[in-house]
Length: 210
Image 1: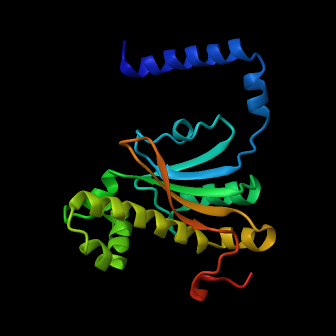
Image 2: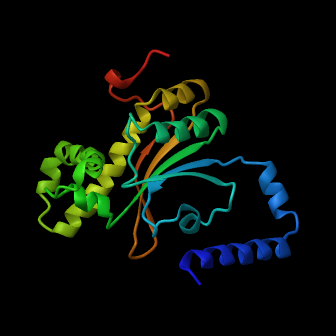
């Protein structure tokens, strides 16, 4: 049996178990999607949003990319954000990084990862430059990397607040609240590191007249 075929078998077993427990489970699920949360997480396979938060299908809307970045030219991310905030009316947007992130570690080196990855990781290098003094003052490499994970999450939350998508929702409906979290691979615990209440003022340069 090929490895991918095992996934299909597990899917059938999972679906059968759900129907056995609740015959109307998929009927209800297919008719309604009203998530309260948008999760912007890392693509790392060890950080599945639903598993680590104990949420069920339909409860959390998810976007994932390398190192959980919010980039103002990323149409994929912005489309997800717009749909979740404007149409699904989510109340919370969570950016969740994780300690030991490969993308974070890679960005802190001078290694040439070729054009596409270099372009993506440069956004993390910008975070390093912005917080260079604090990071350089941490002698331990692991602690320095962990702090960069936290600072990266903080900057991505700030990037959310700079979008007109968030600012329009803040002005019209006082939502969503923005959260920056970091997941620990070693203990499975999520650590909140940065929060922004709806309507929080940022640098006026990034605030739009709406």
